[in-house]
Length: 331
Image (cartoon, rainbow, N blue to C red; front, side):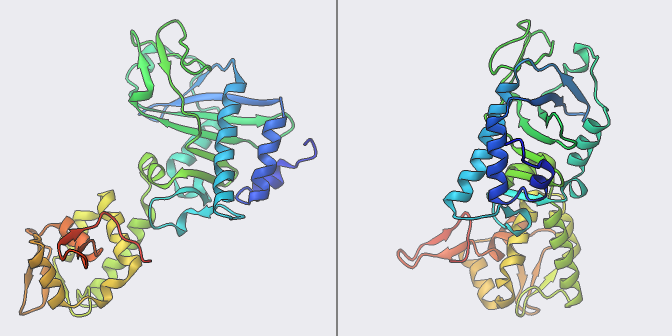
C-alpha cells in the first residue's frame, strides 16, 4: 500500500472506494503515529504521552469499518451528507466542517499551531468533568493528517485524589490516580476539509451545532411576517416575535420547527380542522375563531403547538382513540 496517495484519498474520502483504501492502509501499515490530547470544559488542550499506538490504531480501524459496513448494508457508494438529513441518523459527513463549526476549527488551530499544554500541574485538570479525547493521526512522509475525536462524559472518567493522567491502555491506571475509559470508536474523524460524523444527534449536542435549524427558522419567521402572519391555509399567528424568542435557543424546539417547515404540510392546514384538533386533544393553545388566529404571545404551549403542526396528534383508524406519535415520516 506504499503507493497510496493520501492527499488524493483525502479529496475523495466520502467515497466507498477511498474509505476501503484508507482502511487497508491503516490495517497493513506499522508506522502510523498517534499524538494524544484531551480538551476540558474550558477548551484548553493538554498533550498526553502515548505508549501504545496499536490501541488507538484499533479504535481508528473500528470507526472506518463501521462506516464501510453501513455503506455496504445500504448499498451506497458514498457517505450521506449531513445537510441532507432531517431526522437523527448515523454515518454522515460534513464538507468544510472547520468553516461551519467553531469548536472543530479551534481544535485544528490549536493542534496545528502547538497551542496546547505539555507541561502542566494536576491542579490545571482537576476541575474537568467531561472532555474530548483527541488523536492526531499521521504517517511518515505525509504532510497532512487526520483527527479522531471522542466525547467522554463523566461516566467514562474516574478520578482519585484529583491527579489526572491517561493510560494508553484501556482500563489501566497510571500511578493509581486517574482512569479514562475510551470508547471503541471515534465520534468524529476530521479528514482534510471533511468531518465524518458517527451520529447526527451526538454531533449537534457535543458541538452545539444547530446552524441549519436556526437558518431555517429565521427564514420561516421572515416569510410568516411577509405573509401577514399567515402560517397555514387560512390561519394567522399572533405573537410571532414571542414564538421566535421561545424557540431560538432550544434545540428540540428548533428541530421540531425544522421538521414542520421541511414537510411543508402546514400550508394545507385549515383553521376549523386545527381548532377541532386543539379541542379534541385538550391542547394548551389559545385561538380566536373570529380572526381565525392562534395566539402564541404568552399563555399557549409552544410544545403543544409544534407537536400539533408536526402532525404528531392523530386518531387511530383501528381503535378510534386519540394518539400521540413520537415522530412521523412520510411513507
